[in-house]
Length: 219
Ligand code: CA
Image (cartoon, rainbow, N blue to C red; front, side, top):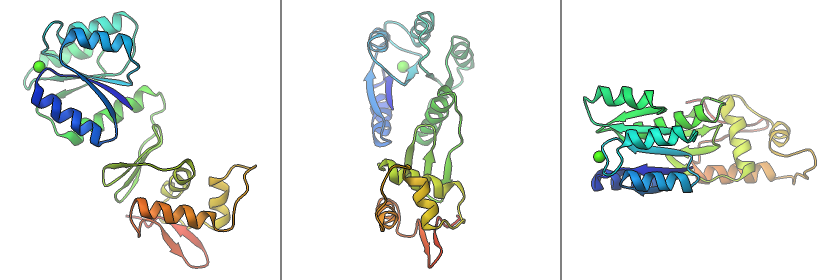
């Protein structure tokens, strides 16, 4: 996910930019309204985090400009504490959500996920069990809140198991879910994928039930 951060406070900006990068989001950071408009007009951002108090054009005028140009990029405005009018104006001008300073990184990330999900039109809820979480809309997978990279097959396998934690899937069932009709399946393919998923998460994340198959223990 590519995000444009518009924030003129160097400390707050640096903190948000590094939190977004840690969460696996590609982030470009600009610090005034003019640069924000130039970046939005030039770049393909999936979301804009927009501070209201900015030099040159303030956040409201940036937002107004974006929407007048029929650009529907999701925007979360960042407002000062107690500035209720700012939040109302931001939403009325077409912001998708707002955050009030100071905010926790976790809240920021949750709001980004929610806005991105709504924007994609298919608001599928997150699938989570214990420390593992999948966002079916973005296909992002996290373990202990850190993004992990999965191959397409690993993702399909984990997604199937997470749909019903506690249910045991046989090898045949999992092969059916992971492989397309035309694909050849080697005899230990599922074991191999599960081994790799355990390495990327936790050894006990996927449990083998001897003679029956595998499951994600319900947490
Ligand atoms: Ca500011």
